[in-house]
Image (cartoon, rainbow, N blue to C red; front, side, top):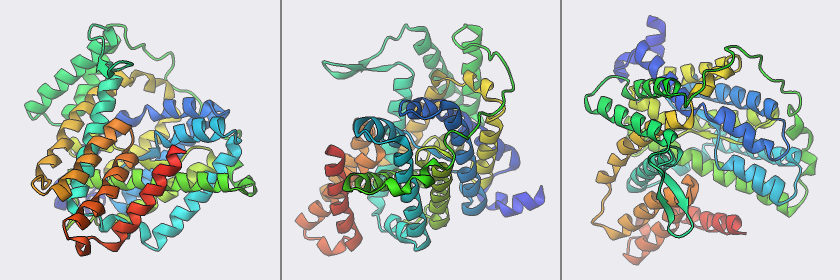
Length: 435
């Protein structure tokens, strides 16, 4: 035990084995939904759902454990929401491209990621982002996940007249989430250790007692075979032979790069890891993402990304890489105990996302709101994430405006040259997405 404590720097980070275990379990519980959502989304593209379930669990476990052991961060990685929808609905269904070819595009993008990471190009890009924009990214992610939580709880719904509206508060599932939100906030206000985790447990129990959550029909279930998807992406690399498919690869690169970069910056800021506006060991953290994406492409799942739900584990005290190791181990256990995951419904995880959103929004106070040249792009990042339902789109809006406002105020030389290049790249990125 002492060796583990020394390796993961428990004393320096003011943590312990129990706290890291609870944090790892909390993070896993908050993002376990991806094990069921990802097969559903990719299944729409014609992929075998059972194989995707297994691929999702394995890719998540490998990348997250790598993050914990090598990068020493409590950040979990799994196939990203949004990019999986782009894979299934835009590329496969919309463009009429076979899923095997689309998976080959993911594999090529993953290899490029590994190369960019080895040459520290991704690391350099993250480090040159101004502090105020990093704070905006952290705050925006907070609003974004709170919005997701409120939507999952049924408290915010779509409305054709007003775009969004208050949901049906008397619906049983909404009442369950409201119960969870109140209980968790009460526990947080009383500074109860692991309040978010215990809030999820109490919400699950309440759901079972009221019949809103069904008890699992079994406890252990064999892991589905990877055979239907394993190696398909690698074998179809030769299919990438057109401008359209090259554009698909570039889009996978851009979306995953900035989703991951933005999320890592936000989480590192929340956990207090940033030093002189830089994220220590960021190269190792980015390599964990690249490894996850490569493994996922080989065995059959969409691009991986750092998960904002990691903030739930950080909020309960997770500070070392052991949090990620535990999260990864739980993903492996999920392969055998998948029926138990049915207890962790979206109504159970919704309160955790709302609470964490509140915690991450505190970064707003550190932004220099009196300097409009900085405040305007920061605001677009913050508001853009929830309104576009995309971390990368929100970042794009702010990064495009930032050099413009700095030039307008005579501070063009204070902007790092890479920020100008990023602005151009993001303009092209938005044009590609629009088309």
